[in-house]
Image (cartoon, rainbow, N blue to C red; front, side, top):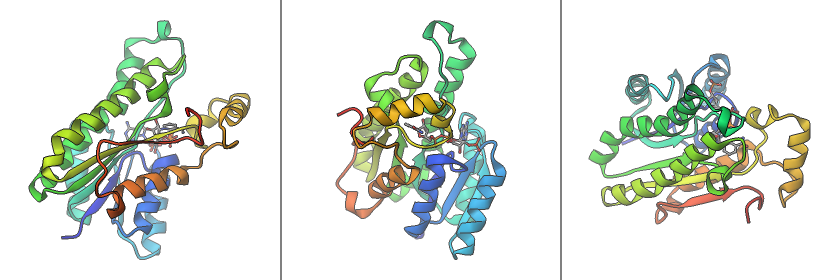
Length: 244
Ligand code: NAP
């Protein structure tokens, strides 16, 4: 049976590169987005023009019902979801003491509960097939900790816990669960920090540059491939040596 890939937060940045790379690898892809509809639809048009199957579907990953509806619509259009990439994420800078309930709850709702929602939406089919692949996007800040991004770092550390725990629970069902922890990647999320912070991050990265969204897409495509058939519960840090 033909299987499709669902990439959350694929309208921009890392998710967009992941969707394009998986499509090039032959996966029909669902390009999930929240606000940037035009960007998501433009990507889908480009992929279709290359003869590939793709669909753009809006859903807030924090909204369980919307995610379930998206998974159903994607499966109806492209075939059952055999690969899920939990990429959608948000970050905010600020002192921990100033982090109010709304900011704290939203970061956890998108970055952690969003992954939970998407996994639970696609899992019934994977369990019945006894196969499937889930790749979660964490962050080096979830491994190392991050001043002034405590909620974000907590959510990304939790994604590592989610990955390892689910890998153990789902291995007997033939479902692999892995995680990519990007370093500093050239996307809007880093651009908003301004040129000085950007230059500092380049300086702190041993390979001397920010990563590209494609650098992360390659790591995700590896986990999704048969070459990673014996890998589960792993965290692959793709950071140019930042936290070595
Ligand atoms: P980005 O450029 O800000 O893009 C974020 C993407 O997530 C957009 O496509 C956005 O969709 C989507 N999104 C945000 N909230 C969503 C929601 N509630 N529901 C559905 N989609 C949502 O970020 P990025 O840098 O590509 O980051 C992608 C992932 O990598 C995130 O999980 C991030 O934490 C992680 N990461 C990034 C870096 C980095 O240096 N950039 C480092 C480590 C980890 P719309 O635009 O359509 O709203």
